[in-house]
Image 1 (tube, rainbow, N blue to C red):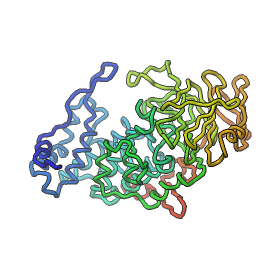
Image 2 (image 1 turned 180 degrees about the vertical axis):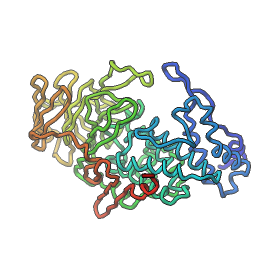
Image 3 (image 1 turned 135 degrees about the vertical axis):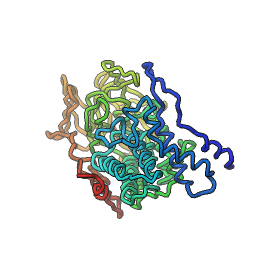
Image 4 (image 1 turned 45 degrees about the vertical axis):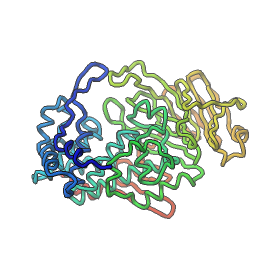
Length: 481
């Protein structure tokens, strides 16, 4: 039930969390107060005209946001967490979820104080525009894209400027469309930038799942719904009909091959990695083409739709770059072409997966999902996927496969689709039928349902009979030349 009296006592006295955060290396800094700040801002804006929120609570929260700069000046992370004078940066000042939260809070601080918010509108427009043009640096993040979406929805619901509202709404559609296009049964396997152990090992622990469920009714189970994001549940935002149509496409598409580029220009990572997904309704193989390290990343996995807690990947510890932030700083050496993937590291079988020997291969099966595995060396693994909608049985699947050969630092292979591959193990570069086969850096999205050129600012969605285009065109009107 509701206890309005108790709730109002809280909102009449709440302060941003002043407790210090102690990191593993012993350094101390202020708490990430912008997370809490966006939650409080949503409360104030949603109930600003309701008598459920007391006048005292409204006054207290309004004073918090109109005087927000004072909190920034007293915060040990002032260099990262400025607010009313915060500017859009590329790459992000810290990470883009913090940038957007702080810009949003600072924007409404000006609005609530009846001050000129034009500079904030320009900064927000520039920050949002980069996402249309270059995607997210925290791409596919199980946790941080959810946080970013929360700030977007505040802007979509409450920004006084119609251009900001529309830009935020369109970008929310783009984020949901990416998820819908690459997920199977609502679950997103494959690579991501910035996640944690619980996300890496089990795709049921994806905190974006509640948004997928509320937007599309996917998945049909209640994973994570106890932590459903209140921002999405209370927002008036509704996905575009074409995005809703797209969400149903993976389940009825026999095979979907996606390629694209993701931006990694944050902290010490090299910018722009190419990614690809080969999905069927029963198995997902997704990877980030890599030959290097990255902070809090998952470079690839093979996930089974019937049980997303069961997956395959490799783990390669980057002992040369110990991180005080995160002790399992990982290295990825992986490249993929369609349903064929090679990766270095130790084999990791999550969720109790076990394989059966089948000739030269070991075959994993989860209901109709199939994956053949071959170890060319203890730390070098080849994976090929298919499903029982394509093949009569596991034996027919194995019969379609060719055994790759390792010759010194080169692996030669032939895919089940008939492509001839050559992989140079020194840098995980690949040729496909004699041509480079892993670089799509001029494409943000390259099908089958999403299409966008890098840095153009326009994403086209084509899903069955539905279609839509989302762009930063109107946002650019607010960005100074």
